[in-house]
Image (cartoon, rainbow, N blue to C red):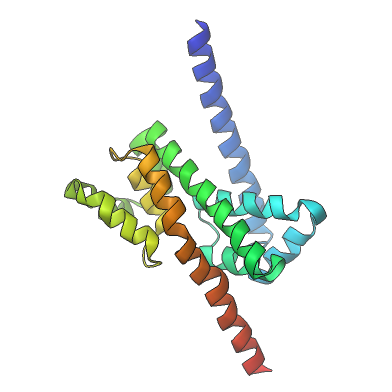
Length: 199
C-alpha cells in the first residue's frame, strides 16, 4: 500500500470512527433526556462552565448531521443560555459548520450514506428536485433563506448534485442568518410571552 492510499484509508477510518463516537454520545444524551426540552439542554450545556460555548457549537453542528434534536429547541436554548446576540452567533456558527460538513460527507460518500440517514420517502421526495436541473440551486437557495423547508435534508441532497462547494458555502453563509434569527430570537420571544401570560 502506497502512502497516498494509506492516508486515504486513514482519513476514511477516522471519519467513520468519529461519526460512530458522535452517534453513541448523542444516543446517550437522547436516552438521558438531555434533548427533550430547552431546560434540560440548558442544564447540560452550562455544566461545562467556560467550555459551554464550544460544547454548544459542537452540539448544534452535530445535530445537523444527526437531526435527533429539533432545530428550534437548540436555537431557543442558545438564546436562553447565552443571550440574544451571542446565542444567535453560536447558533449561526454551529449550524453553518454542520451544514457544510453534511455537504462534504454527502459528496464524499454519496447515496448510500444519505439513504442511511434519511427516510426513503423523504429521500424520493427531495431528490425529485435534482431533476429540475439548474433550477435546483435557485430552489435550494430560497429554501435555505426562508425557514419553510428541512434544511438539513436539503444539504444532504445538495451534496449529491453538481453544485460547486463554493456556491453551497455562499448560500449557507448568506441564507442562514434569517432562518436562525427567526428561530433564535422569534421563538424565544414567543416562549417568554407565553410564560409571562401563564403567570
